[in-house]
Amino acid sequence: MTPTAVAALAILALTYIGVAAGRIPGLRLDRAGIAFLGGAAMIALGPLSLEEALRAIDFDTIALLLGMMIVVAHLKVSGAFRGLGGLVIEHAHAPFVLLVTVTALAGILSAFLVNDAICLVMTPIVMQVVRALGRNPLPYLVATATASNCGSVATITGNPQNMVIGAISKISYPTFTLVLAPVAVFGLVAVVAVVWLAYRTEFARDGDFQPHLKPGRMHVGQVVKASLVCAGLAVAFFAGAPPAEAALLGGAILLFTRQIKPYRIYREIDGPLLILFAGLFIVVAGAEKALLTPDRIAMAKSFGLEMPWRLSLFMAVLSNIVSNVPAVLILRPFIPTFPDPQRAWLVVAMASTLAGNLTLLGSVANLIVAERAKAEGTPISFWAYLKVGLPLTLVTLAAGTAWLTWR
Image (cartoon, rainbow, N blue to C red; front, top):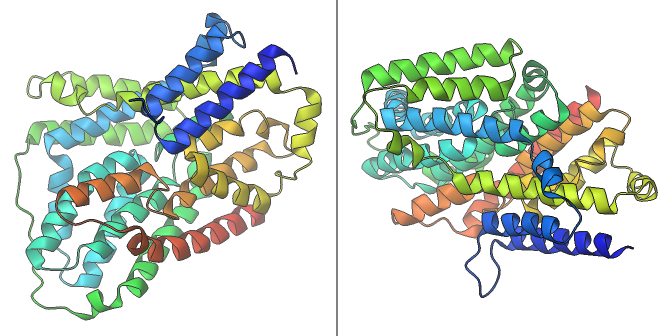
């Protein structure tokens, strides 16, 4: 190996170890900082020039993610999420009905909006309702996290890794949804079944069940405006408009307002996530340029990852080691060489998302629910989550892989 190749391999390995660990001992670097440092090292040590590094960043993905962040932020700040949550949850008049309602709401919202943001919004709503009812919050919180992951499988805008896959693979929004929406629906049904089995005593006790959500302030005009923009985005996505362009235009329309101060929207934007994506794009591009020779690509193909079952298992394991977005980017150079790249990308989207339900640490959505619940005095233990996450992941991965293999 040349010195440049050795440097690229070292940077790739150290970046992914740091991203997997979440920090570097002795330093105040988070995942975004680690990825940014890795990208800078790729430029400084020679694998990539600055121009090549800038070209390596997939700005379609960054733009789509930014646009959707603005849309979700506006829905949150305007009070739309709280109003919708209150309207739906107040019609749940039994514990099992509340479970189904929470699962459906988290899953459907996550299908069209970013699942991490939905968990940020849904967790305090669920906590307020179950506390007022004197119920055990754990089954409903676990359902929120797992349903948001399962629901987000359905569309390109459901989660960050799907956005990356949509931009790289050029699979159209309607095709992506047509293939993976059945997997998402099955996943939501499985969430209800597994949570009910794991927490049977909670659902055997009815008691006084009149859920009520304390109404918050709502900008009615802005809620209507945001709802119309979301409907327009859905039409645009399914009509074949470029998702990044549609999302940016939708976000720009929502920023044009006299009622909501811009800083309230800006502070909801996850800047570190955008930096993480940019850094990882550069790191992977540098490694691809310096390390991927035809012989090494041929050797990687000998592992047989073009087989859906093998690819699904590999993706599930890798996603739980380094997280789903980095895992997707690792496979970026190889999948175009597969006999059926489109199916391979759909398997990767399905497996990387559903694998996030395995443990409490498996996805950002899970961690958001856990942190918000802990802040309100209801910690979710690793084992309390695992008794739902483990069987749910096995069942949904098997069903999703079988569906994509058959299809």
